Amino acid sequence: MTTLRIDVWSDIGCPWCYVGKKRLETAIAASPHAASIELVPHSFELDATASTDPVSLPGFLAAKMGVSLAEAVRMDGHVGAMAHDEGLPYTSDRVHANSFDAHRVIHLAAEHGLANEMLGVVQRELFSGHANVYGHAFLADAAAGLGIPRARAEEVLASDEFADAVHEDQAEAGRLGVTGVPFVVVGGRYGIPGAIAVSGYTQTIERAWAEA
Image (cartoon, rainbow, N blue to C red; front, side, top):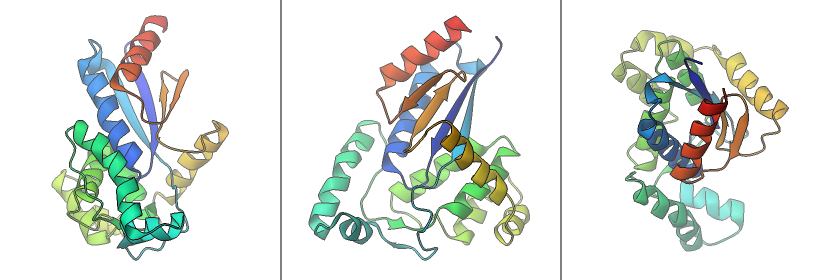
């Protein structure tokens, strides 16, 4: 085997996906086979009915969970502490909205070999509270910042291009029995639900490489 493929299903605003991405990347970077590992992001919408108009994340969580704003922030802070442990910026003062268009732009980025980088930019800006990453202006700017022609990103955002790719990712997740994210498949054989420890990713990667 010359390449080990790792498929990852995640959603933009999923904090566990944010933490899991960093842990998985840490495990990959430490692997002696790092240069031969291909990381392939896949779309998964946790809230497909969300509005395209951004709302306050604490307010959204409070309404969804039936708790106070303070309790919503406290609950979100548990994941935030884990993110900080991984060296990631994190604040509860961020927005929530429909992630479909962001997923479509990530598929555009995949055509340039930049899907994981695009996902990383979107997540970091969202969880640092810097931007409404669901907005078309931000997505076009982020794509252009990675070297993808801005006009091409704007063309995609003004259409329904890559909608089928997003739906197919989600259909494949359904066929695999995925009900939550992050969900990682290593070497087409080993499924890992949730954001596990770096050591867990490391062990699975080395096992898949040894058995292939």
